[in-house]
Length: 371
Ligand SMILES: C[S@@+](CC[C@H](N)C(=O)[O-])C[C@H]1O[C@@H](n2cnc3c(N)ncnc32)[C@H](O)[C@@H]1O
Image (cartoon, rainbow, N blue to C red; front, top):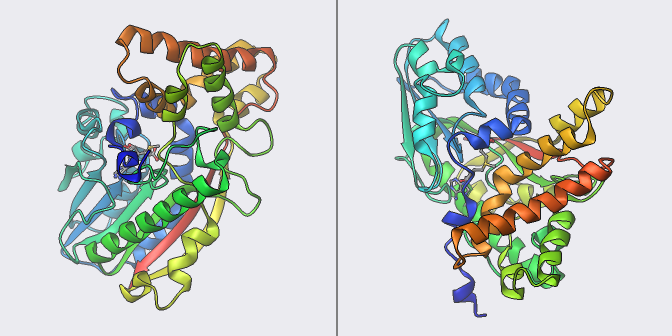
């Protein structure tokens, strides 16, 4: 397949499940966001004061996972700062912005944190253009934030032949993903450099590979992406899906290493350094899978079946579209049947022996300043 054909339209493949399903099933993502609130609070205190405080949440999905953090920050600000606040939620045009807007207005989700209703002069906006582009006018953004989103590359550089994710790709395929991710990281950062005011900050927590080689779903027990591959392959072996459908399920993601994240900041001659971005801090964070923790703490009352039934939906919330899209062209009911069979097989393994099955999160936390 030539490179042009490989540059697939990624929008439909990336979407999270809609109608609030994403944030209901991804407690771990919320725990990760909440845990960096102190870092964000500190940054807020250091950012120079403009007339309007403009904030952006890049790759926000339905907004549910970061809602409590924004509520807490705005509440604290409002005690001493009555500036107008503009908060721009950004995601792909395919995102469920309707749920997001309803959530912020208290019509859905947790109305206790519906800060738009609870505080004066807070304006909520949505932007459906990808974060690899500049999304607002120059020197207008005080604080940018992004959680668990920038591992999505803007296009699939190739299909992976024998695995579903770049973590299991061969060296040639891996290199292609690395090059794509490096270009994307530069676009992301240059766009933020344009948007940010001088002294503005961009804090992001991204999926990546930590110092110990760990990444999402691979922290010592079973490797979740190997399990996806195994069960997807077994559908091919049983001739339920074709070889092409197996290969088409390639995640449009790249997990950058610490070195890859840091590279443009460590080089004073890079475009990023020249654009005025400086890395204030960079560290890694492991967030235990909340479903695993709950199971381990309550083994007397929670069965392995119940554990499996709580774990698999969280995997499904962000991975399902990849497998569904690989089956494009089939009848809807056939797609449902195949995808249900796929997750059921994984779930059955967890029921049988839950040991080592979990989805721990591994994030790289970066605090970036525009000088
Ligand atoms: C795993 S969700 C994370 C959502 C939320 N930030 C959180 O931490 O729970 C990733 C989000 O990134 C979005 N996304 C992927 N590529 C994007 C892009 N190029 N521009 C904007 N959003 C993107 C997806 O649509 C999805 O909503």
